Image (cartoon, rainbow over all chains, first blue to last red; front, side, top):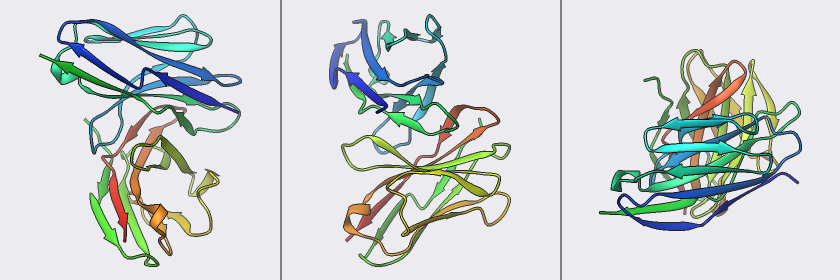
Length: 111
Length: 113
């Protein structure tokens, strides 16, 4: 069964303290891995799509990487406005467009 | 920047009542989706819609649920007879040709009492 597991569940960082969030997946034939940011009471906000092992993408303080079994979201020198839940999702293979989401990592960045 | 618009933002309904959740996807997108998120749980796929028909649906999407694209801009989710367990955030999403990055709306919080 296709599965997505994110760790840690929650992460508290001091402003400027870099860290990484993990997303491990079990999917036969990955079509795409997505990272989203979700603020309380809001919809997921698209950050990145990764398609193949070795691929990396960056946006401001965020960098996403992908291997054959997992993806990391690296946060460099975070600021309080980076506080949110970060969701990982995989696009299931074989003629389907649905996304399978993990439970997310709730990030809090303190000044 | 183009966005997906959902209305209403909050809906409270009595058990057994019908509700219609509305969405306006991004205008040049071709694929439309509904997902839901029960409080504290994962975002779950409900249904995908392409070329005016359902392309895939999950086990959650039973006979109580239906979707429609009544005109060129709106995409609706109807729940015929709501249950307490239907209480959740419902998100509409759309994507362009080939999938890629899905754009989600801000959601409708449905509370069934």
